[in-house]
Length: 142
Image (cartoon, rainbow, N blue to C red; front, side, top):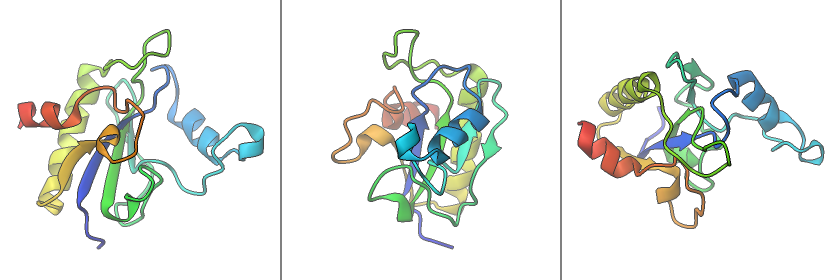
């Protein structure tokens, strides 16, 4: 089991109508074809608007969530995070919020010293992801 220091919250920064399969296809698509060209997914778990999460990687496999911090991190993302104009917004559904809480609590049992952070909380990250203050939100729901 790898040591986990961070539980990182993400958004897909796309419309809530996106599917997990569409996002996976984008990640795998070669850069020359407009994708990321990744071998592995960006997150361990993705949460669609209905709150039924989908496991993308096992916890022992590092993902592509935050460059330079993946060896010691677990990543969960909700589908959404932008408004109709592409501006960052916290548009998580109640089902997505409930599933995030369930996942984070389970991971914290397994990794009690881990910090809950948003993607944007890491040095050098200029994204708004996850489109809300993850640390403040998590402190308010504990």
